[in-house]
Length: 123
Image (cartoon, rainbow, N blue to C red; front, side, top):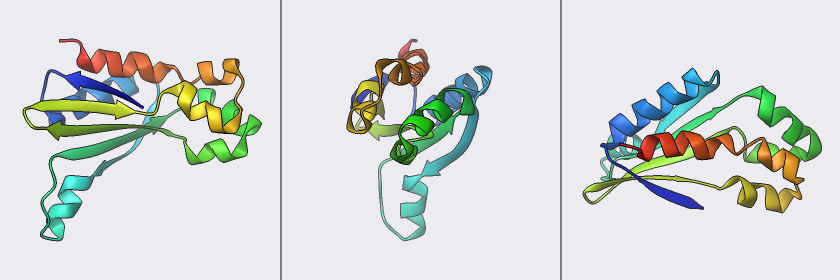
């Protein structure tokens, strides 16, 4: 797992990520708002969102080589409030590929998540 710190609140970090994803020609499939769903049941949860995104170009060869890797795709980034900080978390591509025995060239297809999350933490 990788965790980074964003200099802006959760909502702004989510907005930055979705804008970066779209700018890179990928698709945002869904934003899962765990805190909102918890509130709907009368429960409290810190601001917690998961952005699910991807593109067939990098993902398809991965799933072709290892069908079970589809359980990990599209990629996900967790963004949550951690006291006064905003954290950004995701599964590193090398860690994601290990259980499926993905070759280095296939793991490399997923490394764009590093640049996307780096863009979130730069002020």
